Length: 378
Ligand SMILES: Cc1cc2nc3c(=O)[nH]c(=O)nc-3n(C[C@H](O)[C@H](O)[C@H](O)COP(=O)(O)OP(=O)(O)OC[C@H]3O[C@@H](n4cnc5c(N)ncnc54)[C@H](O)[C@@H]3O)c2cc1C
Image 1 (cartoon, rainbow, N blue to C red):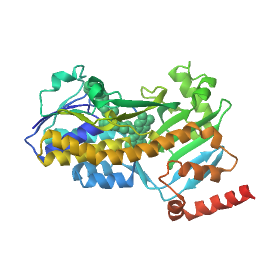
Image 2: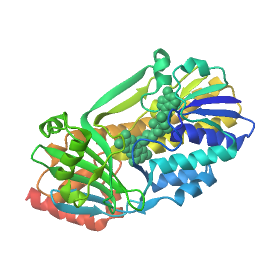
Image 3: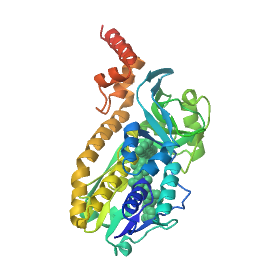
Image 4: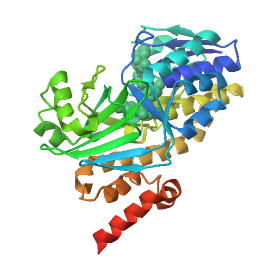
């Protein structure tokens, strides 16, 4: 089988690995516009369940990723100078570039033909194959080229966010909230290697403008955020990696495939970063598609089965992610005086975590919440 994959992110590389490992005679090309050692963003976070899922699809990649993970069990909520910890939430983080390098090495070992520094400008020129995969991310050219068939729906979030790094080493999955002189800000932060943490800052457009971030240079943005989050960052500076203020875009597609073309990962669907599931969703797409392709049915049957199997799971995560995104867009209205009441609201915001689960994970947190609730209601 000849497969052309546009995009060498987690979705494209992992599909190439799984297909080539299953059948070495496949001819698989991955076209990636950036050089092998370049990417955007900082570290990403996985839940422990995601990694179990990877272990049963490619044990080599799973083992190599395991060795590079930074693990922790607490969600930490710094809130107006106080801090609430919720235990029993196993997560791990890794630099995005390290995931890509691990996948690239495995692709090379298996004989996948990788074409780095190769931007595809004409998708149709790569159609001469059994399967063309659009794994080209949120701004997918493949999706755009066949938009009348995929019928994408792009919903733009209201908040502004920026994906930064810092040398401050956070000790858990940190969701910090602070009411600044300009309005409320949130940060999503976690350590992902020995000396660096991811730091995503988020605020409403109104706050963003009041802080002068709409006209600030990159350097000025880092300085403004450094002051807003001085307490959370322990005075350490923020770092940029081609970082820019943007609005989250939720991508959905009415149709997932057209003839021998299929979309995968962020090109097909996105989920707000506050639930940290995009890479997981992308790699799960690859697992399901590779398994169905190995069954040897026609491409049309395979792609129809792929959509049928994956759509419900993806839409469930997208619903939770959207609820979470909207919660962050209204965070200012939720910021009352009590840190435990706020932390409970934040932890349960997407509907995936409830009182019973929290009680199981961290009974002391639930007791503190119930005391605060009773005091507030009396
Ligand atoms: C702020 C932020 C934080 C996030 N945090 C997390 C997290 O903690 N956990 C998590 O699981 N996910 C997270 N994500 C989501 C995650 O980054 C994506 O869901 C994931 O990268 C999707 O993988 P992908 O392979 O589909 O797309 P991408 O990783 O975007 O890869 C697409 C690739 O295609 C290439 N490409 C694009 N166009 C072309 C072209 N025309 N020709 C050739 N190559 C092309 C791009 O260079 C890129 O390498 C976060 C996202 C953001 C924005």
